[in-house]
Length: 288
Image (cartoon, rainbow, N blue to C red; front, side):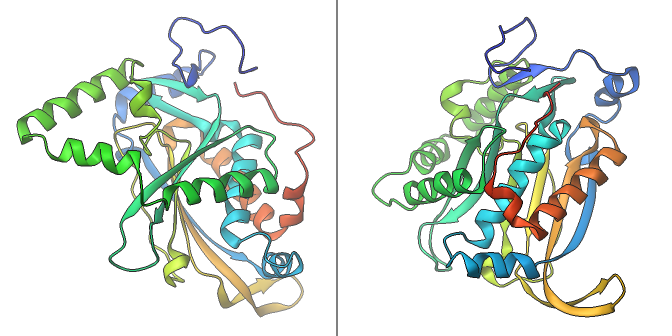
């Protein structure tokens, strides 16, 4: 579906309602009403040997996190069901690929954390992702001004009863597709996927993260640190390689198990073969 297609009744600012959907999938949001209760979990240990070589050969022009984000963007582009969400008991297809992650102002335990939220089109390459990510992190680390922290500070000063009312109102607006754009631009839970890079703090074995019931995020990905580990290689048995562990939490209401497995396999393949991300995908399926 082209992004410039005329908005129809029932669509949202950031997404198009999925109208052609099988009866079972349509009724599931009434049975499993919260995103967290609808979560399914996948964990993979990925061979990162080629990834390490790729980053070194390009003289660290790209970070491991750059490559991972680019692989996730490509996966969402080629498996568009993953870029759906359920809100108001309806299914929606997001118009853009939107990723959220946390960045520290400084790399210390005491440093303030802020959210980075970036959007990409479906034909984004590794260079596109890297350029936008580096710009987003630079803005996030600017200590002179942070709109997200300013907004949270203002909300935090409200009396408890007013804050509860405020949250209920914006959740009600979101349910009906009327979420204010000024809040949407800041809200990290309004995204295709939320990523946390625990490898940046040295964690090799990563936990699963829950999905947030508020917002529209259907995917949470936890990335570990690249380290030496044993993996099974065809014809060689167990071999020591550079490996990285990822843990993925998905809202099962947006698609089906077979689709998820194929998507995880694609993500894994792209991380193992990062050179594929240097070129635009030749063919991207329609959103719907």
